[in-house]
Image (cartoon, rainbow, N blue to C red; front, side):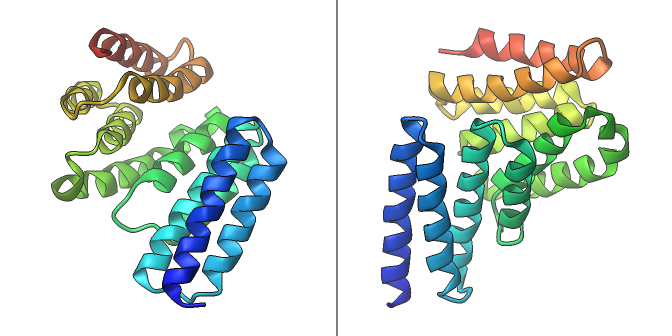
Length: 202
């Protein structure tokens, strides 16, 4: 198979995985994603294939996370991070999953969180029109203790024309973390950001 054929087949399998995911067939979704990843890995690592591998591992992580299998989801995001370039899905989700699995890691993770925030911020010139860029940056600013910068990122998020469903997915992550950090300064910042986004939501 040519690389073009491999990419087309991987995209077909990813679409199949989404159909299984949307009817809560986790096993079927994971089977389709594993087949997509397997076929992509046979293609070597040209840039287009690396991008698809990053996306496919991230999608597998999302399916596992939705099923409540957080350690496995984290492993998938970390694998996707090996291929990720110029994006932040696996990077941001790997930070979030570590904290959801073990909130006590927060203080030891501050340097890693700041590195992730700086990496995402470097992508601003090419990704500033994407709502998910601002969602990721806003979250990482909050985790870095920069609430004002986070709210500014969420204003930009609103300015991209984000849909109601985009707000809901962004808020849901903040709510998950807020539950884990209730009663702390971070928990208060997360709740403030949730209220801010709810006011902006169309």
